[in-house]
Length: 343
Image: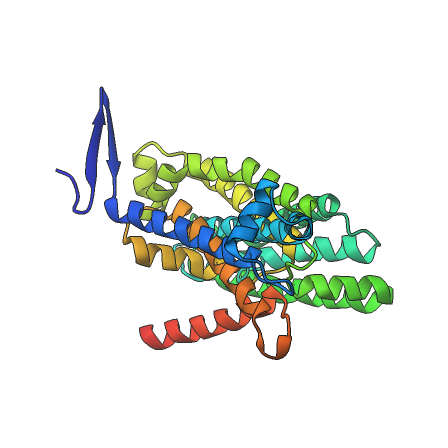
């Protein structure tokens, strides 16, 4: 007997269960991401209409518009979409493994750990996106390993509120290290690091797009390939073991992949709050699916970050805010609303 809200598709000897609501939500999110992309491509000091955007992308339009899109706006849009997708998917993995809605990489210190490595790289005098990404991934993995070991208690390794509390403490400690590094560095490098720590999509180029693209190509297939095992682990480790899932091995691989996704996103734009926390929760609410919403969380994360970027460029008095400040402001309001609703 099929559960409610699930359809069965038979193709020869194969059977595929699919959820119409999740499919509709995913299609709607994809349309929203495309719409935000067009809006962002046309937003700036030189406003571009849809025909001008299409002409510039196809090589038949104004050369000035083509240069603006090719060198400035298109890399920015693609970076925002890729980083939002990476953070949304990473947040879904961490919230599922910890079985805690606060178990996102920006809350439990993993993003701050990645930022520490990137700050070291920047303060030492290098703004190269590839080197910054590699350093951020390495320091993010080190921070994740430390938090998971500190949160270990018997068989409940790194689960629940203990993981969240230990992660918050580790994040505060690493934040202090970041502040110390900024106090010790040269003024020019410190200024660049402070701008980066605010979380910004300004001046993104094709190197940042390539960095995010490589990160998604490496880590996203690993997470998606273990989606079924992740859903079983979320139901309970004992049940997952009875169903033949090697829990410890799968958890380790999933944590490494999710840390890689969040670290790549942090390296490309700086620390971005709220997206990894809210995207999986909003995706679950929209799809109402018991499965871990990996793809829908990725699309939701992309839409959230691109929407925040659009808001940051539409601030009053012509001010252009770093997108990290915009997401932090929205995230604070979101958390207050959730806490008041759930008491």
